[in-house]
Length: 177
Image 1: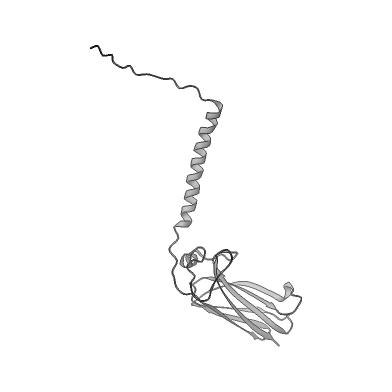
Image 2 (image 1 turned 90 degrees about the vertical axis):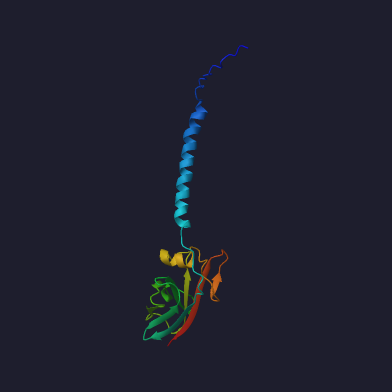
């Protein structure tokens, strides 16, 4: 029996077509983009698990001279930013009769004096709110404790908006005389 030894077959690759030359760099570019996107997402996914403490927020408002004094108490994390909004009950509502600002929680409380000398006498409303999503940027350690989307906010005072974002709110009124 005569056995032939198999000779290796050398095939010369055909030259790449113009389409295949474009696809290889595009495939590499897409792969690198996917890796970069995954790395960017990974930095947000590493956030610590939110605590499941029951959170609360309360405010009081009264006039001290020409200023509206707003004080609040909360068990939100230290450094949490609370959004305050005050407005006069006088119609039509104008920007001159509103005030908004951010206050930071320190040792479970916060407060502000709002100048209202130019506001007319009458009822004044104040709303305080806390949310992780939205225009108010929370410090990362606060977001880490309550969740990047407020998922750690629990308790009887916690509300959920139409997008599923959890938030706290409190209201108070004062009469300017």
